[in-house]
Image (cartoon, rainbow, N blue to C red):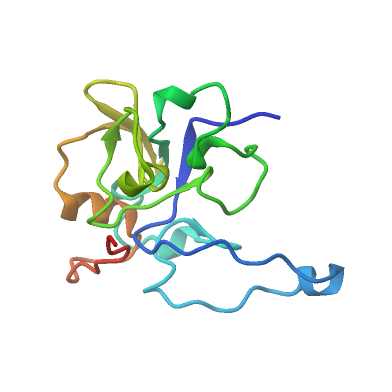
Length: 169
């Protein structure tokens, strides 16, 4: 099945995969409400953002962007962040995060501790391409400051203090 080199913005809060519904009726129910400190991006575990919720500005917020990949696994599907189909739903293959600890990376061989499977990035030497919520496409440098990367991922921070999000082990 098809895989993708792109992932949607899930902001700074990394959450492990939830279990699926037990039956059809449970699957038809709305997911539990999660607070803005948990869901601050565009898509996250069964939730999506409405345009009116993107108060930082559509041109200032990532919608989708290229994802970091381990070049040793471009074609074999053995990378944690690139092993499922693009129809999988919420997973590390389709969602990336903008924690201050997860700045973007140029594609390179990695270990699990690099958390590449959670980062935006690409094989382009100058940076990765991001489609902003207004439809514009920007090249984002790998040298982007961690705080600015966080703010591009958060749809409603409005200059509030940054939240650490995913803290390294």
